[in-house]
Image (cartoon, rainbow, N blue to C red; front, side, top):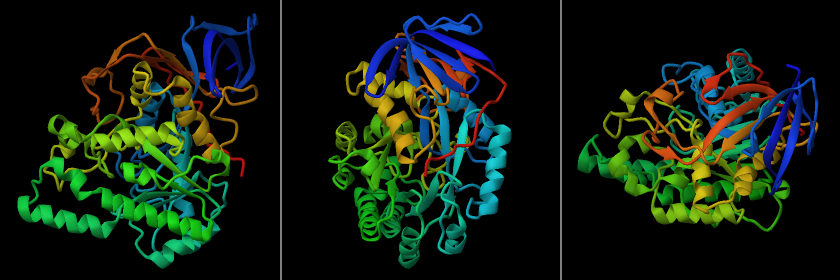
Length: 444
């Protein structure tokens, strides 16, 4: 690939913003400084636009293998790159599920062949694969995923003795989906008795309720404290749950961490009237007060990471009645620009966005040489123009499913360039067909 010299950047990195040039050589950042000159480098003058580390998304569902009518690694990773996401961690509830080392390695082969962004995959824990999990090398992948509550994909882990054994028998990060199955089933039965299958979607947060979330997450945290396990709670959706997490020690010292997703920071229950099942997620989008409390906990560092939980479905599937409409939606292309709107609104600083979307996932999962703009690190970089409005339309949606819950939204900012390991993978709406993605490595 040779050399690339990025001129006149406003670099946002490690809680500061400063003007500098950046020299890339092959996969790496080799020099950061003012007035760099190199006659052998291709020069890209970004004219004062912001240069961020590539976003690391710790929770996506790219649907391959087995569910590729919804999405696949190639299409969804291209969409991710268009949104400034240069690294992702994909979830195990595919078909077949990623619950054996053999199936995990098969996924890595798919990533090597098809991915436009750097990749790792989570290993799925089940009620009966503990011995396989024990064989898993702690550097083999980004971590272990447990569905401690009802979810699509039939990966519910509900045997408490097994859950405790998993917590005691892995050194890896255990990422958990926390919703209490019994509570959800009781709530669903109540609403089905009243409405049949055509339950108004506005009741989704009553069915997948605050109680269901808190009961499961508090129990998982208690078990992590008892066993010393390294627990990461995915996609918090309630203000009550934020009380379970701490901000009095650095992230590097935390044994229990938490993620919040873009949709829980953006939407509230009032949006069900216009968006319907397009914003049906598990866990559910809840009240505006919950959203406000999630923002508060994110900003005071009780919540550590912002992710997407990107989970595409066909539009025709989402049009079904409540009980048949799947939960989840596509988000990787628009997550960063959505957060940048909140920068414009002075809800969050640019430095905090970079901390939560770039630095902290790298720290939390101990990813090697990514998540920062540093000499010697992989050149995963994103250029954003804070003064280039961008409207989401069907024509510019890159997801295979070709819809977005943000369709019709005009964001105030745009991603203009994305570099993956020094390769310019995306520029002003145009994709490179060359792939330069790598399997993640770790400092464990």
